[in-house]
Image 1 (cartoon, rainbow, N blue to C red):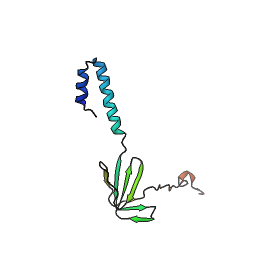
Image 2: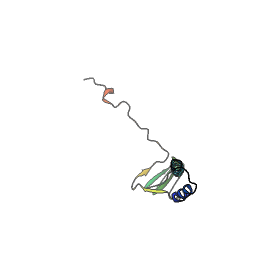
Image 3: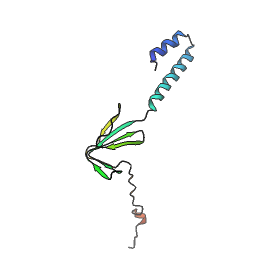
Image 4: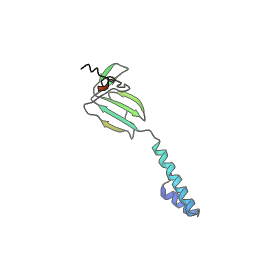
Length: 116
C-alpha cells in the first residue's frame, strides 16, 4: 500500500486542483483504514480451567482461540496467530460455546403470592 507521502507526491506531480486532490487523498486514506478495520479481532483467552464440551472434560489450564465472533480452537495450548491479543483470565473457568440461560421469571415482587 502507498504511504501518505507517496500519495501526496503523486498528486502534486499531476497538478490536480486542490479540492480534487484533497477528496482523492481522503478517499484513499479512508479505503486504507476500512481495509485494516475489516480484519477480524483475534483473541487467545487463557484461563485456569476450560470445559471441552466435545470431550466432556475439564482442561486445566486451558486456552480458547477466538477469531472475530467464532471460537476456532479449545485446548490446553491453543494456537497463537501473529498479532493475536492474549488475555489472561486468572482463576476463571471458561465454558466456550455454552450460554447461561438460567432465569427466575416469577421471583419479582409483583408475582409473589401475598396471602397476608
